Length: 90
Image (cartoon, rainbow, N blue to C red; front, side):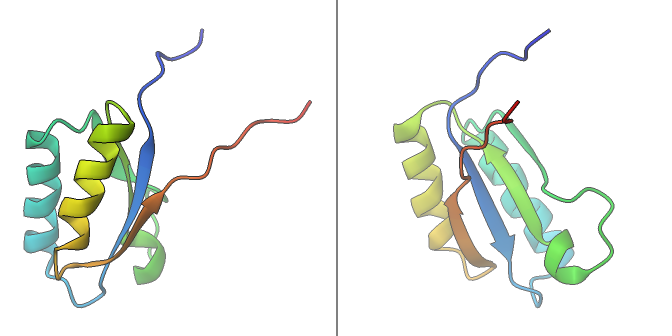
């Protein structure tokens, strides 16, 4: 069964120097701003570079743009970008 479609997704990478508590607070703020779901891109990753990348689901393109602007202003964030669309080729 297919999952219900959400809006555009964003990938956000935190700076390695970002304290975990501060990063967690920013992720909670994103949820309070209406993000549908926030999860690691690589769950269980032990490499700091991979473990610091998260996927944020938004409601719409306009909502994704607002979240992106909010995240780009944070000194905790290294980058934020739209998640590329991917399709399975059969």
